[in-house]
Image 1 (tube, rainbow, N blue to C red):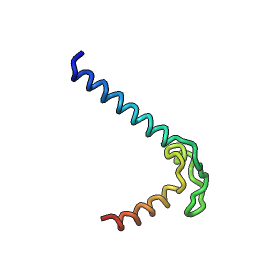
Image 2 (cartoon, helix red, strand yellow):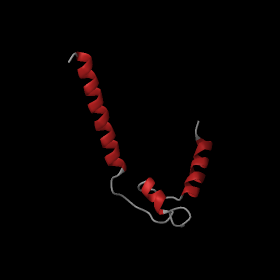
Image 3 (tube, rainbow, N blue to C red):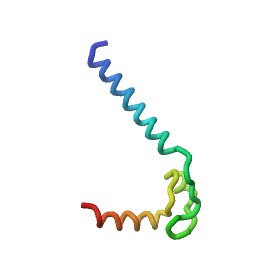
Image 4 (tube, rainbow, N blue to C red):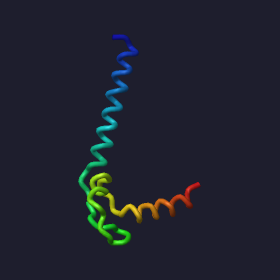
Length: 73
């Protein structure tokens, strides 16, 4: 095993560690909302499962992102 092989192994280990850390942070228990914090409508179960700890329904999230787009530079 030469130094390039060891460098690739190290890179792979660091990448896997970073992905595991991000996954743990993303899946951490937190506020799990069943109703949208903007409009009060129920957030569909499939959305809650796909996007952990989401606080808005898809329609409200789209509006939020559209508003934010106008302020970006």
